[in-house]
Amino acid sequence: MATSGSLDSLTSKLREIHHLSDAAAVLSWDQETYMPSGSGGIRAEQLATLQTLAHNQFVSPEMETLLGSFLDLETGTILPKHQASLDGTAQALLRETWRDFSRAKKLPSSFVNDLERECSLAQQVWAEARKTNDFQRFLPNLERLVSFKKREADYLGFTDSPYNALLDTFEPGSTVAQLRPLFAELRTHLIRLLDQIRNSTVQPNTSLLTQSFDTSKQVDFGRLVLKQMGYNFQRGRLDLSAHPFTTAFHPTDARVTTRVFENDMPSCLFSCIHEGGHGLYEQGLSPKHYGTPLGEAISLGIHESQSRLWENSVGRSQAFWKYFYPKLQEAFPEQLGTVQAEEFYLAINQVAPSLIRVEADELTYNLHIMVRFEIELEVIEGRVYVDDLPELWNAKMEEYLGMTPTSDAEGVLQDVHWSFGAFGYFPTYTLGNLYAAMLFHQAKKDVENLEQQIGEGNFLPLKNWLNDRVHQWGRQYSANELIQRITGQTLTPQPFIQDLEEKFSNLYQFPT
Ligand code: ZN
Image (cartoon, rainbow, N blue to C red; front, top):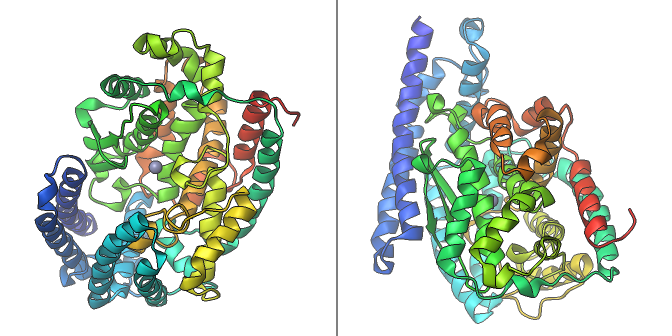
């Protein structure tokens, strides 16, 4: 009884800390959606105060005592006297809390403060540098950030490569040794498919997607799709922001955003579906475990698998549009009334190499990620100087996508990630694609007539399957364990490659 009593104290302390970080998250959401543009300065201070309070409470002596009563704070091993009495859920809760706690403790608070200051400074400089296409301006900041990140890796500790420590922040358990062969295999297939697509005579007519589409009608349609997916508007909402995102403060309050352009209809639509996938994950986490690691998403890769599964495996499928295309035509009769479903389906699945990652298609997107992964690795492992990055970037773009950026703004300066110190983040996007395909293949085996159900607009069997297999577990299992539990396989690019082959050989009419 004493054991469960102090476990309750631990979870209620964790919950209290979460209230602070959730309050900060509400402020961030507001900042990206409705905040007046003039209040950025004070908002940054408000956020910093709340985040510091949350951090200080998490590394406090009180937490140390609570956690230390269950496990060895040095090694994370559960004390022998508790080993028999704690069930698997309690052990997972302690394991994951210790993971966060020990990582937080390893970073000196002066280091964290310096890094945060550098990041907020670097983000402003990056935005200016991108706007003026001036890499030299961003260079000193980027150099400092890289050296911060190398120090961070040293503090956290690692085996084989300092990059592993950074990767582990976003995708626990993932390593360079795992990613290298995985990406190499994937790359061979992507390049082959891309060649076949380039040689095809089939030309999607994408101009039908860039006609004038009423923006409020676009958002209404996005809302309709979200509802049908099972996204609960009593426990979430859809708003507009410059960059679409999902944020959650509890499973009963998981919000998504989209953006809308009159002459780019797919942007709003697929942002809604993508963020809807993230939103369903957050709404599907266990309220019982709120505030603890068991009420949190496993990793960025698994989170991204949920958005990509809905966006690509479902939202770019023929079955999905069998149901939704007549509705889209009804919403936009002038623009799409005479356009055949097949023509529309081909247009939204166009594959074409491009310079900008966020505009890339389902296939070439992963080549953009590989470029970034390889560059990050070179820089963090110290084989390349930061001032050589523009050249390296352009060379890799030519090698992977057959295109060379004509400016750094559309090259090495295009992504915000490095400016907030997020090295090791990019690979999670491709991991998300691979996990998504593995999960969708399994869902097709487990859910009877899944594709037929999707074709009839019945998405609940899929949503419920994801709730049951993925969402409700929080961080009970690692990403690798979860995938293996669900599919019986370790991470493999094969289902993803197979899906691309099937779809694009059919659309672009080439033999597999
Ligand atoms: Zn996403």
